Image (tube, rainbow, N blue to C red):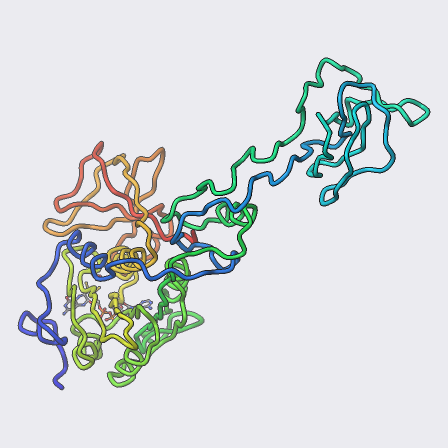
Length: 412
Ligand SMILES: Nc1nc2c(c(=O)[nH]1)N[C@H]1C(S)=C(S)[C@@H](COP(=O)(O)OP(=O)(O)OC[C@H]3O[C@@H](n4cnc5c(N)ncnc54)[C@H](O)[C@@H]3O)O[C@H]1N2
Ligand code: MOO
């Protein structure tokens, strides 16, 4: 097969005619539509569900608290004082017998209240007489019925919905699920992702030398991909057509992500490999700077499972732009969640490209965006100082306008 180039007459370089250059908005929406719907629900143990999206509402499996509980260290008391002090104590996790009116029993915070108890007297509010057999309240007017008791069902009743389907399993949600009696929760399966980093010029350690540069994309993309999916592989592939073709076709991932090799250089094999594999190009070049050579393709299904490939340009900030434009929307949709962005104002002018959308690293102060220097396609210095990427429409934005700022993926 002839070496694929990206001149205008090579739209057949992949399995079907490549789409025309898309606007940034069209490309994002193509990535969401390609995913279609969230991956099917699976049951996950609570520790393994972090960052997943709930496929079903979280419904309380019990009253919370599940029993009347002491809110303080002190004494469970029955009726008005003074009280005859019973021997022993009830600790958290323990059970106590019926407490007769006029008696009291030492109790710890979190302990189940003995039946018959009407209030809890805090340790610092009570006084035991020298005989050790009688408990007095230092200020009886404070002790109303129910005082310092967390009543059963105060937080929720069994069967009550706590969190809606579609919410992300944050650490707080996982804690609530455990408290409400869950061992496993129903979440959407997360997409499996494999990262293939192309480029014989890349080094894994030491200083750039002899025309070679450090691989900046593995350390940058691996953590982001772990936020948005299950990263099942991350490896370097030599600039070799057969190796690249085999790596793509043999990948078990739902989504294969390549970096580099999207353009027209002598060893840029991504288009050719996709054509050879019969992939369908859904996005091939986007009117965005940096990152315009980014692409999205649907790979032939494997075992009935849909598969996709996102080709990110090699220039590091261009690869980040491709991640924001294609990878994050695709993976978010497969995960069943919305992408993260916020509306901000512009603290100063944000320079634009004449005809393309520009993704510009910005810092945010009091929700107002300012561009940072060193924002060239091959640079990461500006990005590393930034709070997000501003979406600057063609022509730019004057100070005082509203701008969408894309935030980096987070673990939840
Ligand atoms: N004739 C044309 N040349 C180029 C075009 C074009 O339209 N016509 N587009 C330019 C743009 S824009 C970009 S972006 C790049 C995209 O090129 P590739 O995706 O083929 O990427 P490579 O050529 O492999 O690498 C480009 C550049 O990035 C460096 N690189 C690659 N991977 C990494 C990495 N993991 N860490 C750090 N740096 C990386 C690589 O060394 C190159 O310097 O094409 C332009 N050319
Ligand atoms: O668009 Mo390239 O992605 O400018 O570096």
